[in-house]
Length: 620
Image (cartoon, rainbow, N blue to C red):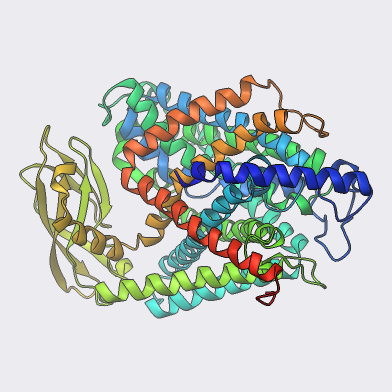
């Protein structure tokens, strides 16, 4: 509601901004400081305003940012869970195609906006032009001060965790935290030194990720004549009983997972001010990048389902890619999987440090937040201070999460009770060993089945609990673990089934379990999924609004199929957001709460700016 409560206030800001733009344009059409008539500016090579950002990124790097920003863990973790939700390959592959087409619709709309406003900040700029600075600030507030630091911190921790597992679990918790912080510092410094340096790094990492994913998709088919047990065409027709009842509900749940895997398709737009010939290269990067992603994702799914039956996919859960590679290559496949996870997380850290500071920079330049964030480094021509601030916030979250985890868990490989929750008739997956830093030295020795359902518990600690039909109460099961020295310990897993069982007295154990399961970063990023969808919708709606509000503005690229394309995107996304709210109500409400927190911050800073303009406070 906070977004829409400020729309009226923002409309006034847009009007004032438009009037000022017209005045500047009439006074000096060639002014390099005006952001009004960007289509007359020189966007070739490294042209830039004096002391401003440098247009150093070409079409290859721009496309790499789009692809690299999207390929993360989603395509490796989600297919197994999707198989359990639907159970039918035809439905699954159709939704993957539909999700890709939805991204194309969004790309068509964002391409028009990016060509109109080739400025740092991307969606922030489009929201400012359509709705005013208040709404744009709320987007920046949610994106930069919650989502991105959590993402960078989580990725750094995941990278070091994968490294520790690859080295046999020899890294202590304190060493892992130190390495995660060091990684953030190094990556931030690379991006401070120059956008081209960060862009070239992104190009290399993206090529490695894309090539690996392509190999995952192609190699099983190449091996058909040489190795038995590769692609089995009959797997495409196997089915399992879906965990989600009803075709519409299945499509909704599967689409949630698919769009999570596609998330970030607009990733190049915040860097628009540093892309050469943005009118041409940004639309091309969006379309080519999204096209590459669709092909890779579809090919990977055909490979997964060709090697593994539907029941094997369902049982694998988050580990479908690992299970396929292990089936084909044994332990060597698992080693390759660890390597690509490290590569993916490394590249994602770089992408986030390329993008997010540009939004912060745009906010500082617009004077809706600290002006120092809008400064460009005189030598490196990058928003250095904004990058440093983003890194500091990410490091702060890493330390805060580490401190919270130390408060509730021990470094000893002792079994600790875990708590989960799920809806009635809906399975839940988890990891009972995730609460121990030395998990690579632990394995499950035994466990007892609950009377209220069925548990499948792997040696590595991952489990799936399927409640009995219509059961809605508390389910519990005990397990025993053993470490490499033969020491054993026992613990209990408690699962609250049905929302009625989750009263306030039982909420604290769930929060504690979240801390133990190293999922705080996941919770933080989940909180902004719903709010990010709101801003995506507002961004696409801005195409329609600006067609009426700024009809005479030059549009180097115009959305193909207008107005059908933006209306189709908005229609699907309204339904999509309803599905998110129904399936992630707590996260959705928390995301809205985070947006609302930005309202008093914006008003307070606006009041401070007015006092500064009157000479009551110093510049910062």
